[in-house]
Image (cartoon, rainbow over all chains, first blue to last red):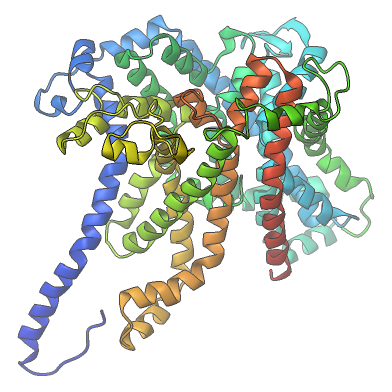
Length: 309
Length: 309
């Protein structure tokens, strides 16, 4: 589509027809792109609109009727938030996701630093084993871990956040589990990023007598903010969206995160869409805010993690 | 650091190694062991659990609607939908001004949980055409409402009203409905990764081809596809692993009912509902064995990348 320089008057009509032709040939592109984007957005928009509709309206007419029949209410959200323990579940989701994310960041960056910048025998083999663990189906780890937790349970009340100190009714148990499951991907991503930092930086720091801890905290971590941010978002969303691990490793209903609560709502109120849609949207709100606010880092995380299975 | 203590790297890696061992390595070994033990993991039964899987029509083989065949359908249909869609969108969005917005629209479902996606799509697939968007649309073109998540008829029975046809095996409407939801969630992933790959193709090369009179189709076929093929391989591998391990989506949407079980949901039912740890473990091993070849390919590719780094 390069503009070929044409001199003189005869060019004008030709350019005009070119522009018209271009619009015509480009029309299918716009139609396909916009069509698919609309198709992809409709389900989420339908959910959002329905969650603000009156229960009787949801049960009797489609969400598209709300586009012409302007009548919205917040009552579904009020009901979900105070009747179904969703407020507590929202807190639980945060109490589970934030510490797990920090734990993964710390443990993975320490390991990645060692693998990227320390010389030791078998480091490549060790790294490959860690990456290979990416493909272990998570479900198959649950029974052994469950047994382990039952044996190692520490039945002491945990202050402030609730639950027990350790075991199947503890936040600590689920933090460690999510950290373990998140590590292969985290180490893979961070090792590649740390490895690409300039070698001179490390050599001069070591020559100046800087300790590993100093290099790690003063050079590696500050320079790796983009990778750490991408990983943090990825891990946070992963834990926030998790159902399976919480379902098996959290025996105490008081500690249940939102995903678990919504699943219970689905099984007990199968077709009460006014509750389901509002509950689902509350659980989506956090991921959506993170996505729109930190889209750049999120996409970086996806790109770096294209091998995550 | 030349004079580093030989134990230092291991000290840095020890938290990661402990977590990976506890949550991934040990469970895999324990599951292998358990697959040769009885329902309560008390006595040795040799290959009985594997024999049961082979013999029992409710679980894997010997049934046209088996979990294994369903997994095979996922394995083929899911990447076949999500990769070309992502590729087409990557090429087309690169040629419109609203590229970022269009990509975000396709990408949003990646950020939400399977639970929320399950609620969204149950609502979309609702049988009542006054409420269910999909049935409202198909009804608009004169088709009868379909119970998308329950209908085990083949696509041909839906089009011809011929009634269920066993011969078509796993090609059931409800399986395709589930795979479509997975495609809705993952096309954003394939779009973002492929689009990043596309950006690495120099515009000069494309312009040169256009000046030489190549058609857009030739450019796509002869330049874009070959240059992008490693990226396409990465995306396909990820989606293949996803489809082998698929659990959450099926569990939330159909619970494996109406012959939509996959190996991971069967594993879950055997282990946590039927309480037969032996058969559950054997199913998990089958799943792991299916993933291993994909893993080997990924690691080979990874080593190749390392060598050429």
